[in-house]
Image 1 (tube, each protein chain N blue to C red):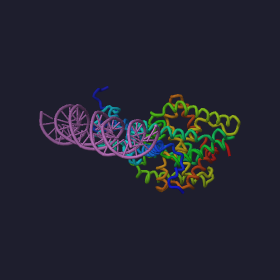
Image 2 (cartoon, chains in turn red, green, purple, cyan):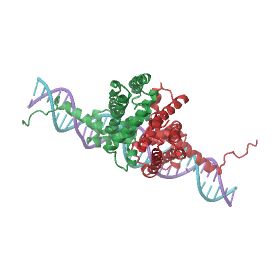
Image 3 (cartoon, each protein chain N blue to C red):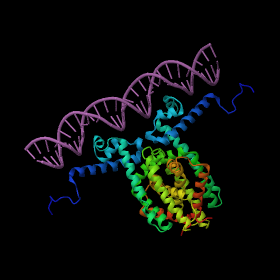
Image 4 (cartoon, rainbow over the protein chains, first blue to last red):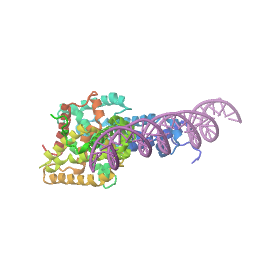
Length: 215
Length: 215
DNA sequence: CTTAGTCTTGACCATACGGTCAGGAAACGA
DNA sequence: TCGTTTCCTGACCGTATGGTCAAGACTAAG
């Protein structure tokens, strides 16, 4: 193999590659630090250390702490939204809601920091993403509520208030990320194993699906 | 009436009364500020302003910010624990779990700030109350799990994993406090009315009780 | 009234934080 | 090769924060 061969990844020049990579490293570090210390408790120095970059370099890519934070929150919001594709294509509540629970539990496991940042943001009154709550999230919620209501009207599930059912789904699935430390402590200080995650997901699915009158 | 009569409230001297009252005012203000800004984002000056006292006076009653925070978290933990008295005296899951849901929903409505402080503390790795998690909470959890398991063994409810059922209960009820801002935004910017709180509580109860095979 | 103990508070201090900047290094295009 | 743009970073700055302190005001007991 030719050692001078171009790297396999498509790179539009080293400049853009460096920028992309550094922004990614910074965002990853920021997500973790914001999650663990909160917005007020997080410092640019901490994020810089975790990213392995000098602090001034962070300000080169993100002008202010708030701008960096905004980007972190936006990224999480995107993941959140795309998690519910299962909802739309499902023929009924068993596949739709069951699949949604599985998807959100998977996200809680894979992106616990993001979930915590989101929770913090909302708990503090959503100073950064209030507009998103009032537009995108509101529309998204209305759409899923309509789907659930249609299932109810078609007799496919018990007549459960769609809004509060959605809140219950959010609460339970995100709990495993946001309160992961508590769950871990109650698990003898060890993170949940693969089997325990499956058990958690199955329990939530079983109780909810039975609770809305399917299965 | 004698204008010089002793005030009705039992007061062991004005000194103790002043101390008690000031500590209460400070703790109330601190709970709110810690909930809204997080530990790192909260400042002693903010708490002082909200309490209507000079900052130096706060340090007279609570030596450090961390000591004040500790006391706030401890107070919430106490409320948390006593919420489950319904659990022990109940003859079965309908009264036990149904009553627990009602009690925790009531707490979420009455103490939203406390719930948020607790959530923040746990999300940040429980730096202050880790010992409580490992002792008191662990024992408490084991006790309730035993009760639920007994109900399962007696055939009073479906065979649901007690641990994850408890997590589900915590998640759903606390969600209404911790994510109250999001719920309020999705409610047209208005807080939930009495009727809406009742509706939320009833929906949660209905889904869970049906979900564990009672009713 | 006197004295001792408790409460109050403005002024102050050391530190840590977010953010700036100038100047050098590296990549790029011609 | 050379000029231009992008990237990098140590040193620096103004501000805000947690915490201290000393001096005074108030309460209580003898």
